[in-house]
Image (tube, rainbow, N blue to C red; front, side, top):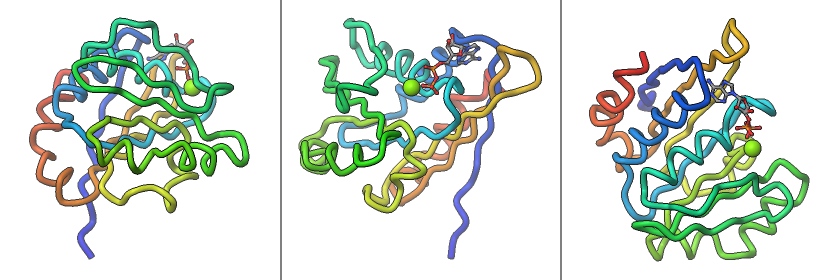
Length: 163
Ligand code: ADP
Ligand code: MG
């Protein structure tokens, strides 16, 4: 089995995580799925804010913890889900996540790790973790599936300023 490449980046502020997310956003295409994992406060929602803005979203991106699935209109529609709560993943699937991806929306799912098995296998997995300083964060990127593995070099260039 091919072991997908892992790319690493590090940031030292929320705005830097947003900038890294924006760079990654420029590598994305309609129908893409990003799974964001990491403890509370690691920066999953912060990442989504930078990502969405890079894709032309002007509305403020807020945590979807209680709304389950937020949709933002940009150059493409950007969907943002948080499936931390038990049962939330099934509700998000019931809301038509697969269909939306098929139609070309781009989706970011927080706590994607736990949701992994129920979601499409073509995805970019992003693991956020805490660094040494309060504002330090580590990003691990794992392209999974042919469409993402093909973009490994582009992703590598995107995060190069953050390595
Ligand atoms: P999550 O969605 O993973 O629970 P949030 O993005 O909601 O996390 O919260 C991250 C918090 O950490 C925010 O208050 C943000 O300002 C702060 N923060 C500090 N440094 C960073 C960084 N380097 N990257 C992302 N967020 C950071
Ligand atoms: Mg969050």
